[in-house]
Amino acid sequence: MFVEIDFNSEEAIYIQLRNQIIIGIATSTIQEGDNLPSVRELANDIGINMHTVNKAYSILRQEGYLKLDRRKGAVISIDADKYAAIAEMMDAMRVILAKGICKDITREEVHNLVDQIYDDFIGRG
Figure 1 (cartoon, helix red, strand yellow):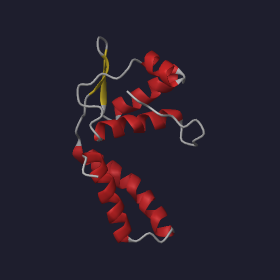
Figure 2 (tube, one colour):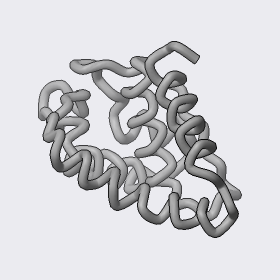
Figure 3 (spheres, one colour):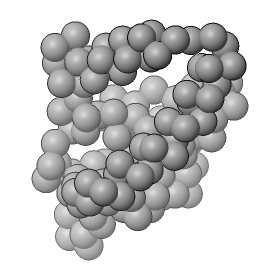
């Protein structure tokens, strides 16, 4: 699994890791049933603390993206609670859209961005 961490980013490393795994799932780079590297292995590969990887994995488990199995380790397992996912997206998008409105980004520009990003994830971009 290829993960690129920006150590100069203001975004926490565990959040960057979490986000990259979610994007990997969305783009089918990582699929249901795939095993993620062990906490120790991924921490060594990236050059970060094991607790940071463990925190990212714990959040992904809480959010329904993976299950922790004693024998298999971290396994991608999507818990599809669509209504909860929509509510979570609404909360995140509310702030993003507010920022866009403050910067005079139009509804049409937002729709085009959403279409472009969605198409990138499903392989039409």
